[in-house]
Image (cartoon, rainbow, N blue to C red; front, side, top):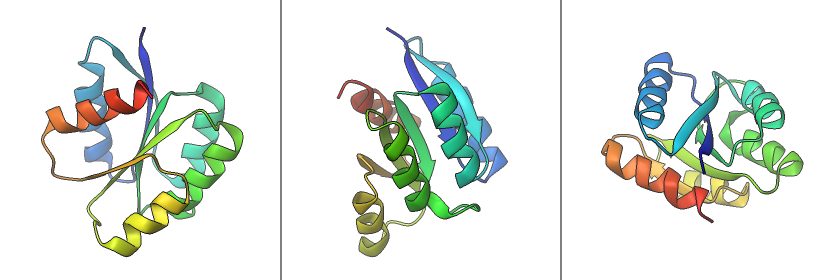
Length: 122
């Protein structure tokens, strides 16, 4: 079974790298890429990904807003917050919005892939 993934990040370099890393996995397919929170919500509704890799700080309402909106329309989706912000307040805000897991930017690609795969199996 192919794991359908949506990437949402406002940094084009990070979007491209994430897409390359995840698309290189034989059991994963990046079905959509969003550059802001509004687009993430729209694309999640349209493509019904199993896992959404979601930046915490981005235009269009931010990651917490996007996570809550996505889960209203697709409660079966699993959201992986992917952020440079690892303070307790930010992590708590994302958890309250319904994020399943939280990974800090800068982790090894293998760790990110493992987190996406883990969420896809929940």
